Length: 569
Image 1 (cartoon, rainbow, N blue to C red):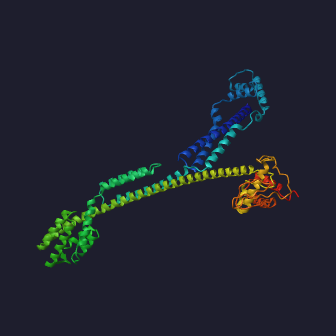
Image 2 (cartoon, one colour):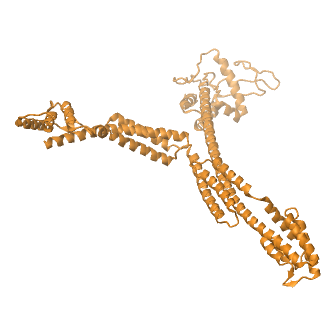
Image 3 (cartoon, helix red, strand yellow):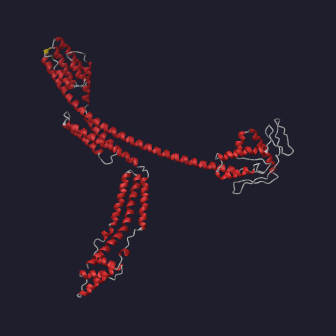
């Protein structure tokens, strides 16, 4: 009985495999179709790069195929062996042998006669072993699904291989994102410097860090647009501007002008240098030492000079720091009154003011450095965005130029075809006239002959007139370019008739054998043998230079060959 179960389990696996192959290629076709839709969308919108599209396409195809291949196992996961046996009985015409044997084994059908149960199982096993499961359940590929999957795969490969117009947009985005990531790191460094600053107050640090954090958050968002990033940087700059104190810079500038305005003096030269260099802390230190000269009291002359210098400094800083200016004026007056102790106290107060200014200056310098970091970020993102837009515009212009050149080439090709058609019609319209063995060539060869010799042109004109006169009494036909051969006129062995044209006085000199026609002011004769050689050379040059279409070259050769004077002799 175990052998029968193993056989049923083997059949079950083969049936699942057969159905799995069917679903496999159907799922593969569906996955490729999904990848094709994504690829089309990627050509319309900048969503995925070409390498990413290849990965997505392969992933869609494999996942869809594997999912479809597992469908038969999923559907039949809870199907019992007895149910499979019933299905095999019906499919293989076993007349319920397998199902009955399994039902007897499982006790679904009971019998008290044990030999009958054993005979039933043996009969079912023998009937099952006689079947060729490979023939009954063949593993064949579904042709239509295979072809469908191949067709979609070829279309997908072709579209993926074509240049994607959105690829440049994605490349520009990647470049801008790279710049943004670098600037996020720069802002993080600026934030750490703010945290480590000793000159900034806690309130200032909190506001600066909040502004930088907001800018970093915006820059760190996925697919942040340059416009949004620039707006975040501008917002952070605006918040830092609110923290800056313009009066601090004004005070430092006035102190620098005060130091520059001081006259050279041994007593105040160190102070003047500190002020001129914009160093309030060093200037404060120098102020504390002014009332004494190397530890010795000042003389009256020195007090007067120092008082004048202090008044000069007070005058320069009057607009930006009235308190310090008043204290300097007070100290100057005290120096004149020889109140050195009071003057020292006033100068110490001014020095304290300068020390506070120095702290503010350091804070402002820290804000300036942070603003510089933001400005650098702003410029970097702006340049990256402008470069991306410029590159996109160049690509668009190149594409438009290529399309324009393609259109011009197509127009030139049509004009060439029209010119060739006109040449063909012109050659087909040439007439063959028997006349007096003269050639009436209205094509390009006669035109070239006329350019080479004016005398030959005159001779041709007379010959044409004579030929047309004779044509009124004889029949002729035209070569219109049909498939029939060109008519060769009957040979005339004489030298032809002479045509005498009017002379310079305008009087006609007639020939008894030729009609009277107006002409040029000289006389010309056109012997047939002389004209033929010139025209034949012109026609041969036209054939060699490719001026006559290939389809008409044989006609031209036959025509001039038939007129050859040597041909009839």
